[in-house]
Image (tube, rainbow, N blue to C red; front, side, top):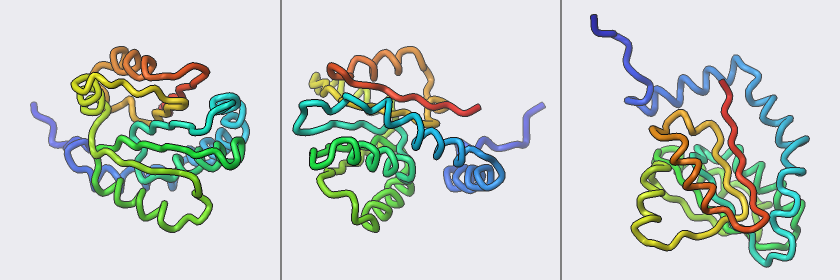
Length: 174
């Protein structure tokens, strides 16, 4: 018997609405905020020591709310250091919201943004084709591994992109 339930993956706007409703009834944002305030400063310690530019890669950055918090913590830890922040996000709608959020913020000085409308797998394929694997000081993958077909291969690839003293942050809430 075929299921009459549609997958949220097939309708992005429906997914976003469902996720917003979930957040309004869960403590996920509160837990994430506590993590950002209490744990993230220790995680990012030393990722930018002696560097003139810190390179951050956001995989599945969504509308940017968490990314902006991360960037603010990095700025606080490394005042005056330039930050290159690249975002890999498959949803044009989410990228648009991210750009709107950045435009509203006045505290994002010294940060260069670049957005790539693609999945983690598409990014990986593009980088492998270019044969130019850029190294990153901090890579974060928050609530995105649900969408990856081959998680071990994806993690291995992104781990290979870490520079010396770099960190990768993976958050999965289940």
